[in-house]
Length: 377
Image (cartoon, rainbow, N blue to C red; front, side):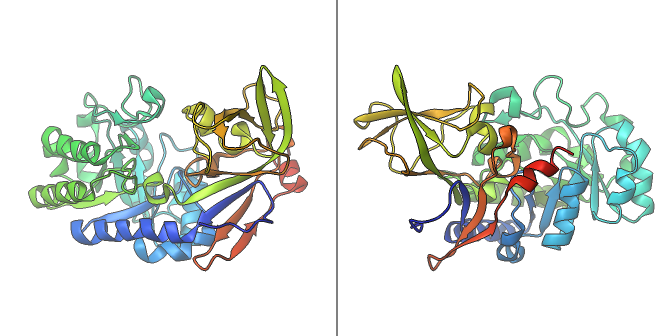
């Protein structure tokens, strides 16, 4: 990976070569397991990259009307949508956009299922199978945490109109490795077999971290094949981060140097606005060429440019002192932070850019004052 020295910062940069490597894994899973794989646009959506992805995926999955519309208009294959609850009129509009509409509870499917079926759409139900394997962030990222909003519980499952349901949906993972994926598939087979036999497809959701180093794809493929052989149903996966993990960067520049007990470098990016998962998970992202404290001789707190006290990215060490204008490259920035960024404090959003395989760099979109202004009404 080599970025031009004169790019404007901050910038989210998609590495096309890395994305293509990840898509090769997805194609292998689809082919060998004979399953469908969808892009979860809640985790990442860059329409400029969709042409690169279209042949490797079966479509997109959305968490509401606007994501579903984006999938329909920009990706152009199957569109699946789920929300814990739908607003008045939303399902009616979704029937013109989505092919598969999933509901969260007996109440939701009783109200809106007839609308979806009357429009000829496939109907799904999300269950809460009581299988926790979210390896990131504890209960914050565990769909099966106590009192979760997500999915019909075992106590309510017999209230569902199973004769009118096409797809059983069980999304319980977050950044899970292969044995988490295998565990979920086997758990559903063991604990929910009578219900699996009443549907045409089972969607095992997202959180399958299929391109993370150490993920054993063979384990996932074998589990899916065994499930399909036992039940004769279609299997669907909908990873987001697992498709784009380690495929892009957030490039920033040092715009201020400060000292208060420790050396502090202030950047033209922000944890609060441009990488919110740094604060929400929390975690410390990797910076190319930097190490943890104690590794190199020059240590800095990296802080954002907003006026929020906690806008701190982390502490790092460098081989040489940082200087104004130095460029820092944060890795693995295509998932979640890319779609969750804000203009808090009037902080401009980063450029959206693509680094092509031949080393050429192109900016897809830049943001300015008008983008900030429009968000405020």
